[in-house]
Image (cartoon, rainbow, N blue to C red):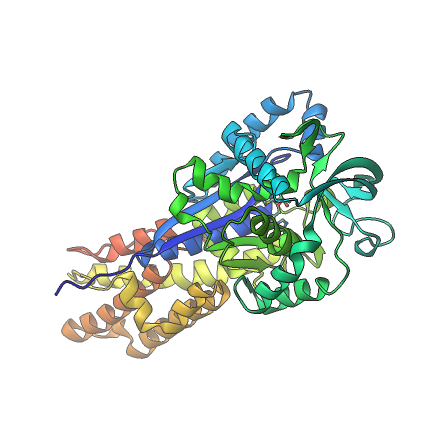
Length: 477
Ligand code: MSP
């Protein structure tokens, strides 16, 4: 009998980032993290769809374009090329690069808004309160620290009063709360779920879904004097993309990846909008912490950004990808510094993996060893179930730790065997054992460092092994 293997659809999204500037390390961390998880799913045989993109409307973008002396459309067109090139240069394999100024997205967002209105979930009202252009978000008094947004510069917040349309968020929050509690929407990790559930115990104010004075946006279909609030149409991109790119079977998304500042929008507002539209809800929402630079949040407006270009220039693409993985802010925020990156690179890559590969390939090249490996990614994962669990649960730090252990154990075994003192079959046996371990390590690292993993496999799985060039050049301070 032919065994039928069910191929799973796996649709992962990153946030669509504001394209008012080039990507910073926070964007890089989420996107590389996401790329690693999608590559993992591709390797285990899932049918994957990976979306990233840019959020192109709203006040922040319009103001930046104006400062640059460009009309907003020209500005976002140029930025979109820059962001796309950027992800390519980092070997990010997204299937969709979503842009909210895409006319096809505009049409779908308008249709969804009409659906919500027809459901009776929209009413007109007056908004009075503070608005932060950095977050593109109305802020309640409770969210402010000393009257200002804790995430952005004080000049980005101001008092607003405008007539706009509201969505009956409060009608849906009891159901959203229940779905979060019973896991129908799987919000992870648990700490981030707790924060949302506790906020859902407070009084919920309805959400303003249109803006009266922001012209750079999608026109509200029934009132041409207003545009759709940028966050509302941005969230809709995850769904509109599946229609635009003919991938409807991928909805609902398997998982939305995002940083903690975007949690409320994805875990409460987005499900509520979808419930109003009677569309299926995302299965999982994964919220990671923030990168800090020596304890302070990294952000464009705070001006403490470690540039991704500096990292790639110094550590290469795969080195940078590995460092993103090793500093993954999974549960808590993660504090990094230039020194921290240098140290991890030297310890794990130059001295660790790189040194092991050169040492073994050099000794193997002195013998006439040929090697073949029967292992594949899935076979190795079955052997190292804790690594599989790490990938499945997005805990890449645990994968890195396991790889460190494997490298150390392989080095220790070599030091014990001392193949350089052995001869003939004995020497060959010791080296072949080390090569097998190196090949397992490179298979595990395939989603993280695809080019390096391939180089290592090419170097060892051949008729005659030759000494490799150093994979990672050690940094000297
Ligand atoms: N445009 C909205 C998202 C709309 S999604 C429908 C937005 N854009 S953003 O450019 O500000 O990017 C926010 C995302 O960037 C976070 O969710 C997170 O993925 C990433 N990060 C931004 N700063 C970060 C850190 N300091 N650390 C880690 N990731 C962070 O909000």
